Image (cartoon, rainbow, N blue to C red; front, side, top):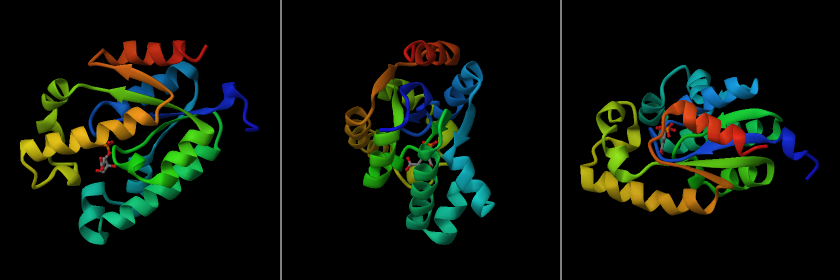
Length: 172
Ligand code: S3P
């Protein structure tokens, strides 16, 4: 690895709606680094939100774009990168992040996550048409993937600033 530890970009992973974007922005501000939100980059590229892209072009086009943008972002230094909750299902995404970045998993319990569901349901295509049991199953199926591939973990429903402090402190 030719990138020094201090220059490595940070990637935030975790299920939809755990706060990757909000916390990513707070961390970027604290560290005076640029923030890259992969969902937002995809949205800019297609000029439509993920839900529309899923409808117009299908999930595979979304995933391919997501993969390319993450691989690109990981090559850059000193970034804070937030990736969508489904990104780590792709081998190449995990490999790119694991080889070049420090990965933080924002680990929210199902109980806390459930409280946020109404805020998410309309904008998240993978939740649409699913009942609560099916969503819980998706949540549980994805946990091991996040758990196995992070370098560091942030647990629980802490205030944004506390999580951001924890992340920046753990880099020192
Ligand atoms: C997805 C999560 C979303 C977005 C897309 C698919 C997923 O990102 O990439 O709707 O499969 O979990 P967030 O994790 O930011 O909600």
